[in-house]
Image (tube, rainbow, N blue to C red; front, side, top):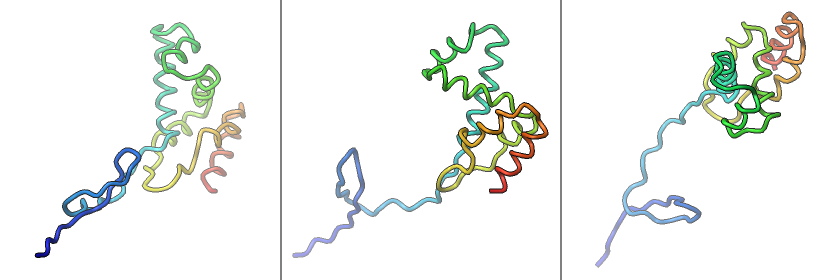
Length: 129
């Protein structure tokens, strides 16, 4: 007598397990919003909370967001970018695979510039490669 079954292997927890039945069909990779776009949106939201008086200062905001004060400063510094750059960051294309093309760390040198014209030039260079 021969019994034939389909099984597939899946990682559940820290262990690889054999699971009865056919393997689930592979789906197309999910795209995701770039992290820098999320941080830009957070910076705008946090700024509005500060302006509305919902939170007293960035220290309180950092505590409520469960981040350090220096990290909160890094996020809030995104607001010093030129408005058109902020808008482009919010509308960056979704990431389908691999790492984000642009990170907050990449933008530190851009938002450190006070002149928006220089920021725009540095932003274009960053996008180019």
